Length: 89
View: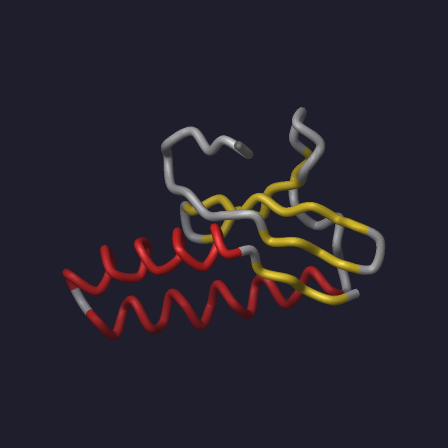
């Protein structure tokens, strides 16, 4: 399987990284590395994330939720959020 990251995910991740970096830049870099590693594990275990009623799955990593779709041979990373309600619109 192949991982595809949506533009929305990239934008939301940038906001998360910027927010973490305001406190400590090294923590932001470490979070990004660990998140990317967690996402890469989906290639071998695509059903790892919990199912959602909207038809996608959710990977939870350090308090952040990463919604994703399994689309044939692709895993599409849709976004990232923490505590707020994410909408697939």
